Amino acid sequence: MKRVEVKLNLEAVAPLLDAIKAAADELQPTLAVTPQVPDLEEEFAADWRQELLQNQTSDLNILLGLFGTDFFITGVVPLDATNSEPILRACSAVRLWLRSQSLAAVGDEALETGEMPLLETTETQRRAFAAYVFLGTLQELIVQHLDPTELE
Amino acid sequence: MIVVSAQPQSDPLAATALQAQVAPQWHVVVLNDPVNLMSYVVMIFKKVFGWSEAKARVHMLEVHERGRSLLWTGAREPAEAYVFTLQQWHLTAVLEAA
Image 1 (tube, rainbow over the protein chains, first blue to last red):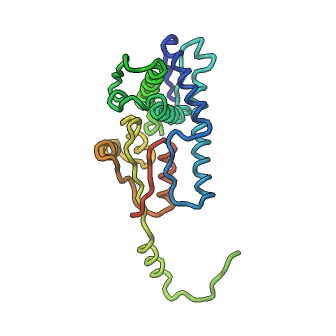
Image 2 (tube, chains in turn cyan, purple):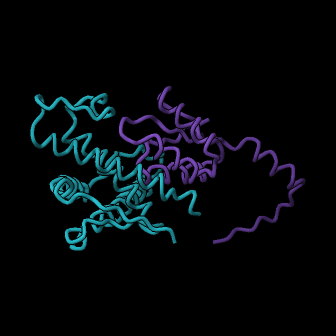
Image 3 (cartoon, rainbow over the protein chains, first blue to last red):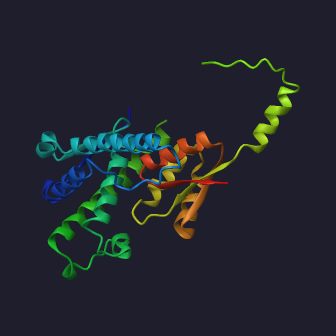
């Protein structure tokens, strides 16, 4: 099984984990994106949302699991075929949540280019932005080296 | 309870063909969002629909440039399954009557 170990700079990443964990906590009872559920009976629509939420929670737990005790000793996150898909989805969920919450006031262009006007932003926004960029980089890395469609 | 009809079907094959012909069709559409990465969206399209990199890229660019892309059309049940799967990947997927 293909496996990639990513060595991260602990000093740079550790502060971002607070923003990621906070977002993951906020996402426990809610979905990152409100889904447009097809016109179904209310019972089925509720099941639809509930299943999406359960999957999102499971994915987020796998993402947070990357940054456990071992990570703080080695600075390494192991990625492989078993965790790459949930981590990709969890990164997307957290990025969407950060975008809609902490970074709502920041324009799309700044988020896309990665050039944030530092003087006009708060410390919370800067940390959320760094977490947003970090998770995007993690996604790029997984797609590049562990594309699930290539591993099948 | 299973109800068995005692009425003979005059031409079951013709009836099935007609049913298939008039069965409503549904579109699976993905809308643009400012967060998900292009490479991530391409990967999802490849995975969910089994498309080539080139086809997945065409649809991703359509979403990016036109705000939406029609990904699949067919019966209601598989269309719902596609929408659900795409929503699991946090794409803004919707079901539309064809």
